[in-house]
Length: 121
Image 1 (spheres, rainbow, N blue to C red):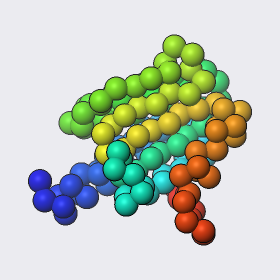
Image 2: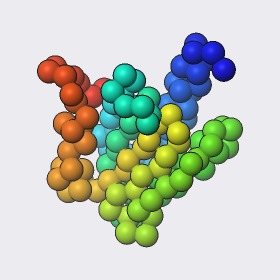
Image 3: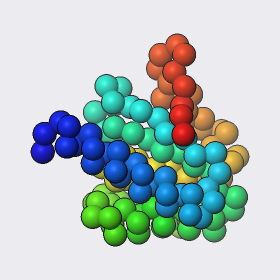
């Protein structure tokens, strides 16, 4: 795959992820562009769920919709507890968390390595 095709596929996957989160009313959805900052992923999507059941449902919907759209789900972690579920979609990693967990770990700040970096949705 050439670079332009890969970039298009990442954006298509991003659309699938955002739609899957929106369908189940995820809160405070943010996308962090990590191209050039991390060799592990291009984008990180962070969303908040209102309960452990909501977090699990959001993450499950992301995985289901990504598979249905033809993308590979490399794995997920945290489903049992439901406070923080990570879904690895290879080029995009999705974190769905309870608000208190998200506030504590503050991934947006952790991954903002340059002055003035902003997370966007």
